[in-house]
Amino acid sequence: MILLARSAVRLFSVALSLAPLAIVGCDPVHASEIDALGGEAPGVPEGPLHRPGQPCLLCHDGEIGDPTAFSVGGTVFDTPSSMQGVVGATVAMTDTIGSSYTATTNAAGNFYVTPPEWTPIYPIVEVQVQSGNVTVSMETLIGRNGSCAGCHTGTAGPVSPGPITLTLDNGGTPP
Image (cartoon, rainbow, N blue to C red):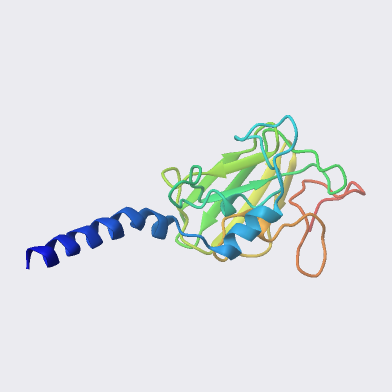
């Protein structure tokens, strides 16, 4: 009986020591999505200025061992062809229950919101980006993913409206 109790305690101890691995887990789909982003840009350290235009919430998803969680994150560019980040643009967002938050882009054009600052109730129903006298309003809802680059990939096409920009290459305003 004592031998059985010691074996049970030992088995429980092993299971408990492996629990963090099970929690962090190894999701091969998630890992491959992160790997597909590639490495950091040379000379740009990890932090608020890194990876403009990439889907922030792939890494900033709040899982154990990851960097700080974001509720929403993205990048505002000047034009589609320049891909130069806009500094100081405001991104005003309103969720389905009328709660709103305004973020400001940094030197890379990146903005992000952490859960303690604002946790939207999806869908986010209104987004306006403003810089100077230019205001661009998003025409669709954000259904469930606060990572702007989840939809706004590098080029416009059948599956993406393209990057978030304040002006088009021809000088016009995005629709």
